[in-house]
Length: 167
Image (cartoon, rainbow, N blue to C red; front, side, top):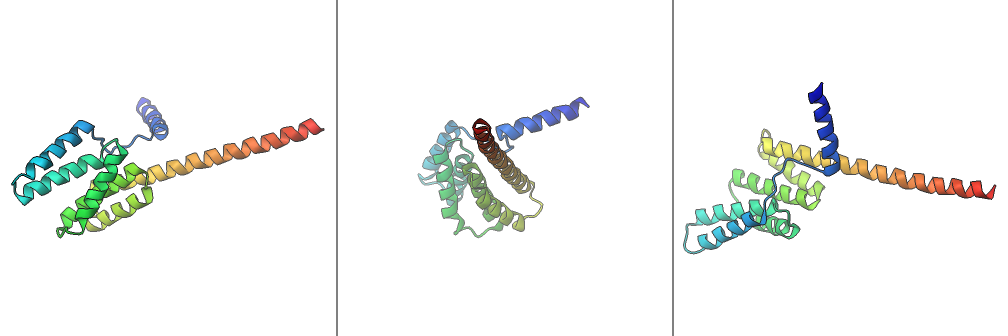
């Protein structure tokens, strides 16, 4: 019984805080990945450069700074066209979906994660992101309805008060 109450309280808390299971990345990790990319550019193999750029892209789309997220999305979208491997394409689309989710573009994020699931239907990470996106869309809808109902209530209350004063 206590476990159910705890889950309910966590659920309510997460509803109001907007908590999700997608990890965040700090600026020092982004800076470290940028240094890796710079060092890999000094004569390393193409595979090492590509790996470093993917780590940087991951860090950017998981950053708390909106400008980092946008930079990560741009890097990934620019590299997506030249990707031949379905696995790499899936990974890049997933990271772009995370970036759009972090940016608040939930519909674009959902489209991309659905493309990932077309490539790999059982991919648990993409399934979790899709559920997170859908939960966020529902939450935003509930909050929007609540705000609209409050506004209507205030307006109707004001009109009723005005009529009451006249009589």
